[in-house]
Length: 571
Image 1: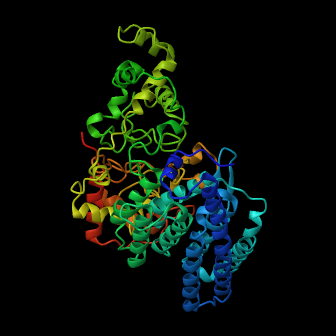
Image 2 (image 1 turned 90 degrees about the horizontal axis):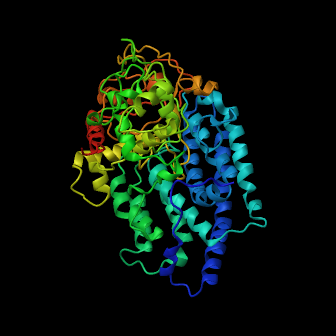
Image 3 (image 1 turned 90 degrees about the vertical axis):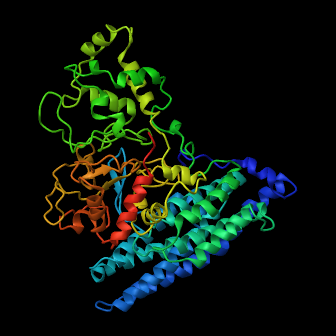
């Protein structure tokens, strides 16, 4: 069963502009052409998988050339896979998972089940592991599954049928993957083959959209496809690829034409708020704003939401950890910002609140945060003329409705992507390319929200184990004892796991991380550059962040900070 998209479906109105003579002819050309294309590409993918298996079988302990040959073969196989990824990812998700699942355990909630890492990403992780020779048996097993599954792909076409709209929607989703995953190196962070993979994927889209394309005139689907493919071909180096230019000059105009819309991946309305939990609740936004500053919500009548989420601080508080309401002791975790919080499927650092409404109630009832009692709270509010006979559900819904308005999308980066090419300096643009490339920031902070919502469906919130220390001394780090999501969801892979927040408005909202351990952005970047907790010498067996160093230069780190500043909304 396919999940509902948070990203808009393909607008089939674009088909009004095509040159085929009838709906029936066009439908046949699209569906039959796509199936024929898949049939032609499948043997090439099989051949690359077989060659990869041969290279893995040939690995000899102590012989690095055999490992290098296997890595090179893996890149070819990945590129071949991306030629059919749009088709498999949409129509046959189980098979696609076998080929390109993340190289980490995937948790199936709420059943507390997990799936082991499998496929090309796991093969990459093993081939780049320092103990690669010890993994040969597992590599061979992974390669065998890969070959067998690839060989069986054509059997999926037995009695298969698809509509024209489905094919076009699969193309639209693939274009989002190109922009938000492939060119960022999400599924090949060590191999760094993302640019070649994006080219293979875009070439597939070119073939599928052939019935809608004609001469390569400027501002046409064909023009942006061919020019984008050419740029990916001419500039294959992953670290130096100019992603911003590729996006604004080719990929986004192409997306707008396919959608027959003025909107693209970076338009504020692209990811609909309506897809998130309780977004249709009948809350009064004006009432919610008034309640946000209301101290009567707290047990001792001294604290409001705005006490810790201060609007002039981008709804943060500037502290590593705020105080418990009736004590001078620190709260367990750093106060997260609230801007763009509505674009998440769960709230709090550990994701323990299922919605904004749930978050509101948990904060009110928390003896550490607001320490409110329902009867006392309502008695106070009802005694004030501004609230009348207000109910607790009204408090929840109205506060949540106000939080859903905190989505300004007014940063220099937003203005740049909307067409104002003077909105970002050259250093900021260079930092954006590092963020989406060599720095691998965008492999967890996905465009366009730069949080943990995973493209292209944006229907799941990601939790990561970074190994963040309890202090900011990376030479003498102390292990953090916060169990993270494990306390809420008792499965070992969640030990120390936290929700990936947005990095929008990061620059002015120090300190950072779930415990507020890092006081500066420089410290955060240094932590990631060294490979997280494992990279700085801590033992974090379940770390999901790669422990491989990024080797960023000082200039690149400065550019990254400049880009962070470009994600700051205007006041």
